[in-house]
Length: 154
Image 1: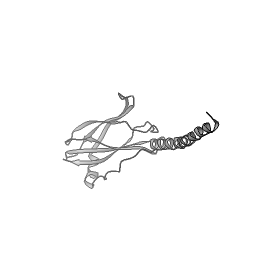
Image 2 (image 1 turned 180 degrees about the vertical axis):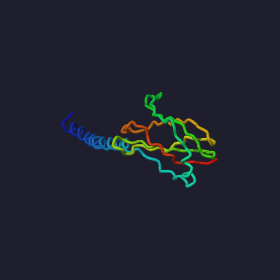
Image 3 (image 1 turned 120 degrees about the vertical axis):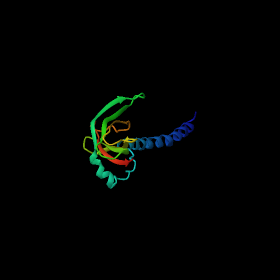
Image 4 (image 1 turned 45 degrees about the vertical axis):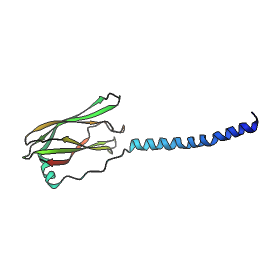
């Protein structure tokens, strides 16, 4: 092979290698950003006045957290507990907003989840289990804040 052909072959490699070298840090930066800033669903409507007044009748108890390994090798964090309806109305649905923080107290993950999906009568206590698989690694490993986000009456 002559020197002109070798120079041409080398110059044909320069452009693709330069493009790859430029894309690697960009792709790495996007992945880094997405891991630290997960997409959050839009915030749902706030509690109605009627629901706000009724919240004092709901009691969360025996709330604890545990981690288990999933069948694919990831960790599932579960929040377990009980809810009691101490009011005089039956409830069709109750949702919580679970807020996870990092060591600096900044929100790293927020999810709204149902804990009551069928009629909860006055005086009734029901257990709940909330599995979470997508909590960022920057989470502080502490029980999340649990806030009643929605109440639907029967």
